[in-house]
Image 1: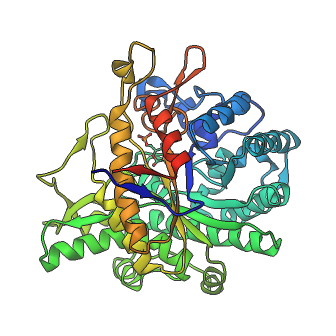
Image 2 (image 1 turned 30 degrees about the horizontal axis):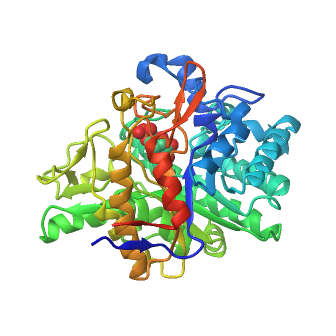
Image 3 (image 1 turned 180 degrees about the vertical axis):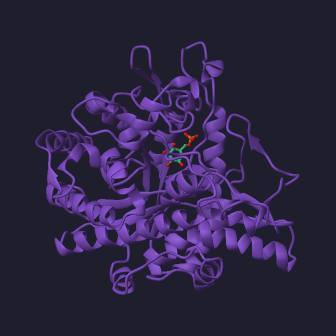
Amino acid sequence: MKTFLKFPDGFWWGAAMSGPQSEGWAGKRYENIMDTWYRTRREDFFDGVGPDVTSDFFHRFEEDFRRMKEAGIHSFRTSVQWTRLIADFETGKPDAQGVAFYRSMIEAAKKNGIELVLNLHHFDMPTILFERYGGWESRHVVELFAKFAKTAFECFGNDVRFWTTFNEPMVIVDGGYLYGYHYPGLKGEGRRGVQVLYHLCLASAMAVEQYRKLGLKGKIGLIVNVTPAYSKSNGEADQNAARFFDWFHWRSFLDVSILGRFPEELVDVLRRDGVLWNAKEEDEALLMANRIDFAGINYYHPTRVQAPDSITETGWLPDRYYAHYDWPQKRVNASKNWEIFPRALYDVAMAMKTLYPDTPWFVSECGIGVHDEERFRDPEGVIDDAYRIAFFEEHLEWLHQAIQEGADCFGFHVWAALDCWSWNNAYRNRYGLIEVDLSDQRRTMKRSGTWYRKVSMRNGLEK
Ligand code: BGP
């Protein structure tokens, strides 16, 4: 017999995207580091497709909100682009066209009954700030980010009730300075990466400070990608490896923004290795005073770790303290080579409950990217993405279980509402509930969109 898994009243059924991945190069804006990367090293991009090829949200947001509504989406996260809103980065003066665009976008969301969550940074550092000051390595840029945040809150703080400062700040550290898969593509630059990590935490706290100073009535949070570590064995060395992975990759950001301080053990290790960040004395009080109201958790896959054999890297990398291993029972999404392990969502939820019992949170991204979805088009012309429905069902079952056991999770956002461009994969992996045909920008609901509508309408699903 089937049971109905009912979610708490008012639970958010939503979806996420980001400005740079959906708006393209339309309208007036400065160049960001992703644009520059594409302009200068096109060969690094899958199929040579860059951030100029998007679903054109810039012109089509009215239609997109209507379609999201049809898919049962009642909350939507996107980002305000620093390069679009701001006319003068040093003063934070807004650009009139940027303001007008976001105003009409916010208006259209409202008209469709969609709650917006506006994020301030989704990997899109203005190139000029990178070239002039060194991007997130510079404390001056941290201060400029706070000015941008203030402007965004002044312009839209009364109309948008939910804000986040960063999406996945660890990707900026990992991708940009440690493993080289994002601009500026450096590897093994531990000292610089750790300084960037610190500055991102500081920038987030300074943005929170600006928000509170304006006395706005909404809430402000931070979005962190959590890839929880499972150790190969219960042996001490393997467990230490998993612990370090978690400290470095996600507890760093969550601890400091929720508890106001970094995990002490992490700080000790970084100090011992000579890569600890430079800080100012007043920072400690600033971080403690400006903690977030809620957290967003992006969950896609777990991490399997064991104790490392020996340290071989040049420079400093966090994986001197752990090594990856292949879990023999692992199920994989072949398109992306990411392990599918829905139970981890339960474990993450319970970790949130234990580590941060007073902070509500939501799943701000979860999804499965699949290439060549054309293979699954049915005779009616609809993408029959049963794999996506199964993926969500399994994750939601575990999430439901955690909520039953007291996890304070208030919503679920799929990645993504519509197929959108992505940093390293362009359109190789499609994630949307709604298909986008890039040749003519036609939107078609996938089976998963119809399924999501039902889940949202009933506030739950059958198991
Ligand atoms: C998350 C990012 C998103 C999105 C997603 C899918 O980490 O926040 O911006 O791109 O990953 O990843 P990908 O497109 O690389 O498969």
